[in-house]
Amino acid sequence: MKLLKLAYSIPTVIGLLYFTANFSVAAEKSGQKSFFDYQVKDAHGEALPLSKFKNMVVLVVNTASKCGFTPQFADLETIYQKYKDQGFVVLAFPSNDFKQDPEASTEKIEKWSKENYKISFPMVEKAPVRGADKQPVYEFLVNSKSGVLFKEVGWNFEKFLVGRDGRVIDRWISTTKPTSENITSKIEEALRVK
Image 1 (cartoon, one colour):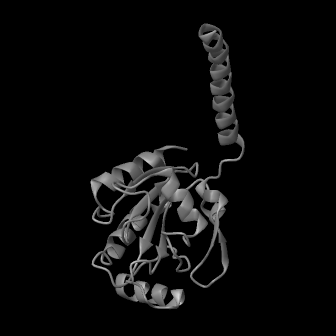
Image 2 (cartoon, rainbow, N blue to C red):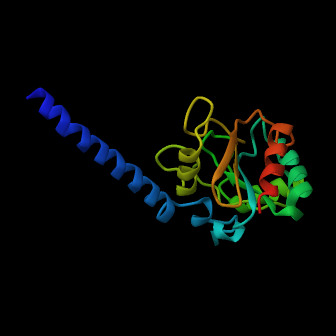
Image 3 (spheres, helix red, strand yellow):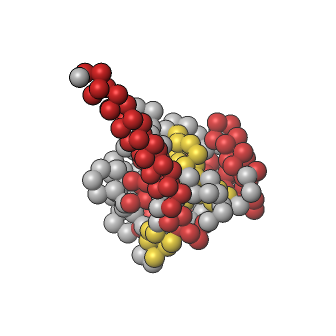
């Protein structure tokens, strides 16, 4: 009797595995979102579909104006200028999740960043990047690539590199400088993919 149950359950398990695998592949091909499927608001509160950056390599960074890592704005501008003509963009996502960007107006944050760090890359509206209230695009990012210790963003100036296909290539913690070879080599590799 036990042998009969075992013989019956093996084909059932194989069938379930086959169905699950095929279902996952089909879901991935048809309905799985990419970075470019999301929409945010720009620094002036206007709708900004991320499809505007489709076929580009995007470095997404959650920023803050009163953080020890704030000087990374200068490095972000350096790599933006170096690679922008090859189809690269930096997108700054200001957030007060760590209580280091208390300014209410994103327009003021953008103005301050331009005056102090001469940034010319786009900045989006300040919004949460972690926790239950995080914006949907950040839900996508952290689900695509977990951090060193945690899935959630751990601090300001974490970086996500998104390829031309809208998939997350890599993720770096705040202490990794944007101009480090660790990041620039990945940007260059992603830019070679057409």
